[in-house]
Length: 344
Image (cartoon, rainbow, N blue to C red):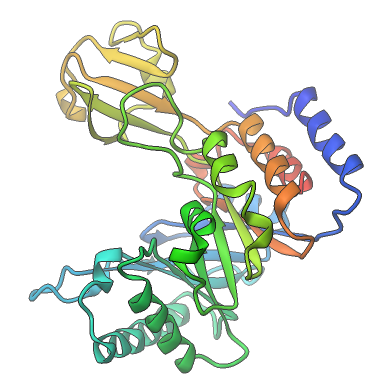
């Protein structure tokens, strides 16, 4: 069932637009595509059309130390079973596991940059596109890997046409801790406004979208970030499993309907928490396991958009929803997403 925009949500967005007279920014909507196989899907194509998305941020591969000798190699690269539609441009995205950057010499990083770029070029051609105008690197770099990551970005830049933009993802802690995190040598950054809470902590909280964390890390710092900013917001939900109050993973077998089945689960006094009363070996779950159901709702996205609109510069930017998947999109109507875009 799709969620309808409640009047209060529309009212909140309307107030934002009426009172924030200084906001004259243009928002370009887009989506991440984070699956390992691309096939055209009519539902997904309709969302691109209805939100007027002109670009699609496609995860090309992960880079991890999984080679035979522990070297960095492409992991789970995307396979294009069909070409991307002519109506959207492709922005290739490469996710680099932070450990890849540890103990790497400059020649090794230079070689890695060359391999990444050539691999991306081949995958772009497989997608049916002749070129791309932006390459995005996704990495949660740390103080210990900052120097290596920034050097890798510089090596990539040297291989790219001057007309192609290089961008990097940005986490909340890298905004607040600007002095220690540094500023990556890229043209733009994309602020990832999800997975911000403590996923592994037991209790009743939403680690996907936590406004307290957002305010703590961004309210005094975002407006002063020295690079042009794009923003990503979540559309996904998940079920987090705890065993003896210890994090045990994320279950893809459990949705909200499963947790509301009283023959299997009992709700705890704390909201969002459910205890399993019967074994579910097919899902790898035991009696007594506690599930925290974390969901992203339109009201949550509206509050986040209203908050961000107050601190983002008045520049044009891209708003990327994570991610383009028919099942993930089910709770969100086209109109609902358009209202979120309008909030900026």
